[in-house]
Structures are given as C-alpha cells and as structure tokens.
Image (tube, rainbow, N blue to C red; front, side, top):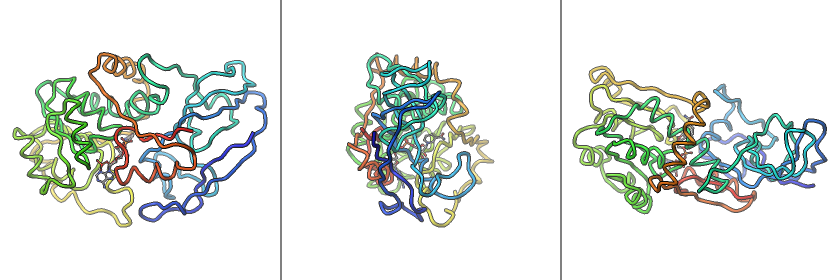
Length: 332
Ligand code: NDP
C-alpha cells in the first residue's frame, strides 16, 4: 500500500514555514517477522517538535533532514507478523506524521480506550499532555487546598488540564490564554479568573488583580513575560513548575531575563523543570484519576481537529499562533 508522510527538508530559523517540509509518498510492503503494518487514524502535533527541528543536543535527538518526522499517533493494525498483535488492534506509537507504517512490533503499544472518551484522547487529555499536566502539577507543584495556582497557556492541551485539576484539588486558579473565546471556555470550566494576555494591558497588573493574595504555584507553559510576572507575584515558598516556554521556541537570539530572577532568593522559591517521560511510571494512576474526573463531569476537554496529512504542517504551525483550544490533533 502507499502512504503519505511529512518530511523535514530544511531546518527552520525562527518560526517554521511550510517550505521547511515536504509531503512524500512511500510504498509499504507486508510486515516481515516481528513487524506490524499499521494505519494511523490520529496524529499529534506538539510544541516540543519545534525543538527537534533544530540541530542541537537535547533530551531527544533532532529530526533528520529528508526523513519523515516522528510523533505520537494512534492507529489500527492492518497486518501482523508478530504473535502479540492481530489485525484490528488499536496501537499507540511514535510513528506519527505518516498515514501508515511497517515497523517492529516492539515500537508500538496496544491500547484500549477508557469509557467516555474517543480514541484520540490517548494523544491528549488521557495521553502525554494530560500526564504532563497531572504529574507536573501534583509531583512538582504539590498543590494544597486554598492555594492560588497561576497557569499560563491555560486553554491549551496541558494548561486546560492543569487549570481544572487545580480546581479539583481545591486551589484558586488564575489562567491566561490568547483569545476571549478561550477565556470564556476556561470560565465555563470553573477557573476563577481567566485573563486574555493579549488584550489585558499590563499582564502584571491583571494577574495581581486576579490573585490579590499572591501566587503559591506557577505552572509555566510560556516563559517570557509570564514568568517574570509570576516571580513578581509569588508568595514565599511558591513552587514553579517549569513545563514549557513556548514564547521562546522560535527565538533566533537567546531571550533576555527573567530580569527579576533575584526574587527566587528572598522568597525562597523552588523552580523545577521536568520532562514528562520521567513520570511515565505514574501513567496508570494518572489515567484512572483523570478519566474518573471526566466521567464525573468535573473535567472538560477540548480538541481542535485538522483533517488530513496534507494539513498536518498547518496544524503544527497553528500551535504558535494559538489556533487551537485544547489539544491540536490531525485526523488521518
Ligand atoms: P498547547 O495546546 O498549549 O498549544 C500551544 C499554545 O501556546 C497555543 O494554543 C497558544 O495559545 C500558546 N502560545 C503560542 N505562542 C505563544 C506565545 N508566544 N506566548 C504565549 N502563549 C503562546 O500546547 P501543549 O499543551 O501541548 O504544550 C503546552 C506547553 O507545555 C508547551 O510549552 C510545551 O512545550 C510544554 N510541554 C512540556 C512537556 C514536558 O515534558 N515538559 C510535555 C508537553 C508539553 P494562546 O492562544 O493562549 O496564545
């Protein structure tokens, strides 16, 4: 069978453009011993992929030029030459950015869909972004009831889960997002204050008004000005969960600041970064807890779905202009 795949053909400088990518057709044979043939039904686009487009040492190796990109995908086994898999099995893999693939069975994982969600949720609220939110907030943020949680990127895949988990754990939650519609979504989901950071004027004053008692936990998805505001408004012993800094991912020069990092001393702040894979062992607990919250109607999730591999690059680029509410996904 034939499969379309998206390849990286040049390394972006600054914001990527469609010309950094190409769509190519490959022919797939039947699986050899120990291999499976899988047709992807959903693929994920994630901000971290921007980092892999740059040739530098990091916690994951850079994407190779001329080769298909990689990323989370949910697909169906069409043919298997491995006894552990059969046609019809639903599998999760890192072989996204392609319609289908033949790969060693050891590189895919059989999954089932928890009640109350669609299979694509395994790439979002019940997948990597959900685990990022749950583990980052619980393990690093260590929220206590009555504390104030500030989360940037609040209407995204990670942030929307952080914000609602914070409410479920008894926090007062202040979130930022880039449109009024996203803020309305956050308000409907129970967040105490949702701030449109693009139109609010001084972000510092807007967050100060929304969190008059200061901030006890800052869940950072954005970096930049948001981080400076959080440092300024942090209470003594506040915890900073450094999850992401999307405001910097397309920077062509090292960004300045945070200019007020000195606050970390006098306020005895704890600033801790993490990569979700270090919490992989918590996945069963996370899935049980978050799927229960979804079933009980205490956690909503949104998905922005783009159709077809031909629009996967557009979906990815949309992450940097805020085109998504909740998880950005491509249906294949
Ligand atoms: P999102 O669903 O939040 O999508 C990205 C969003 O970021 C956009 O919708 C946009 O929303 C916002 N954004 C884009 N550019 C800017 C900017 N310059 N300033 C402020 N906001 C911006 O993505 P994810 O939920 O998948 O990821 C959120 C963050 O978490 C990212 O930084 C990501 O890298 C990080 N992450 C970290 C992991 C880890 O292991 N540490 C794992 C997974 C994600 P808006 O309209 O509000 O601007």
